[in-house]
Image 1 (tube, rainbow, N blue to C red):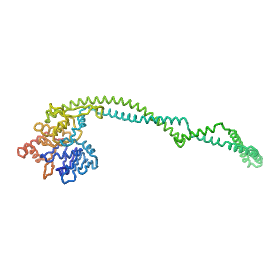
Image 2: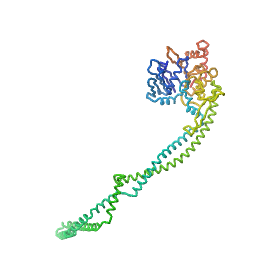
Image 3: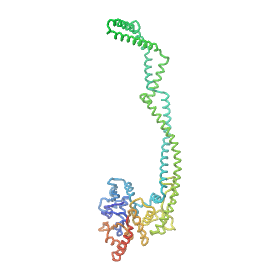
Image 4: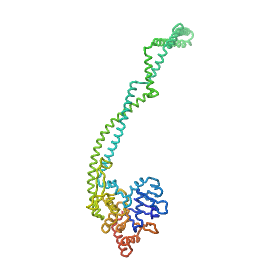
Length: 529
């Protein structure tokens, strides 16, 4: 709800502040006093075009600040237009969107939301049965998600095919090679052995000769052990030494036999060294391609297998997505058809009920025409665009609202729509809603504004005393010394303003009539929120 509006240096307004109440609020005053400037100020917050000519002569800039639910929304008009929300600079679109969530404005020279197709759709859809639109939106969202996913998968298909071929080749190459850390170490050790075969024979032969040949180290140890054993018969302390020496003889014997076996086994298999060199060359070649070590190469192989699996799953996912996409499209078409049928029913109801309201609001020959214009494909809100047209009289064809309706007629048409369909915003502002009407039509407009004010905050610029008398809060705009002045009227001051609106003077008869209007309004309480 609009809690406060401050306007500085806008045209003839030097400084003005109003604090509208819940329910019905009216702005009255002589023609040219500047009433509609307050509406223009609000339109600036809704993104209306700002011109430097709007700035009061002698001032550097004009400012407009409105408080909705405790938050200030402002705009400075000068060399630079600076929109702000809570003191922070924002874009004009962000300001307009934020204010638009709180307030709807309907005026001849302001942002006429009724002329926008998205407003037409929302007004019609307000009459739809529960669930039909949300079901369509869910079906559309699911369809679009699958469509985008299928598009991404198809776009990546060629690259994926190339990667699949490469990965399959690499995995086959590495799997066939069957590398292992242990084998590489064994091959290197065997190559070392075969490369130095003659040296090994020489060294092993010499070692065996020292143990069992002419030197006969093994025999010498045995003889030494026997001598110690004989001496131990006379000195028991020598027995352990004799035993240890005897054990050494056994160990040396085992070593001599193993050296002999190794020496006999040094025969080289023909071509074995070449085979080892070839196998190790394979190791080196694969390490140059896939990693510095065998561990790196094996890790690459595992990652390649996982990547291959993921890419193959992507192919399967594409097939599944395309299948699901067909089902989602069928569901979307069914939801679109249901939405279209519901809109056709809502269209008939809206045209009939708004037509009755327009008759009561002084437009007896006018008829709202709701057009459902088919789209080539389902969009975010269905298979059709909703467009409102006005048939001013039976002999004229329907025309767009902005062309068929004057400012006052447009405002009254919006009033009729809001009465029938409700309103999302908490605050609604009307200017010229009473243009060109009087008598019973004026009373009907007043009563409907008051009815709307039971559910919303309504602000009206009006010339009609029938409307002003029903207001909960009454503001008057006057011009003094070339400046517009806004004041809140209460008590006798309000009676005098109604008298002026009734007859243009403050005669006793006019004052009595004004007091009577107020008394009737207070007794009906139609202006209360």
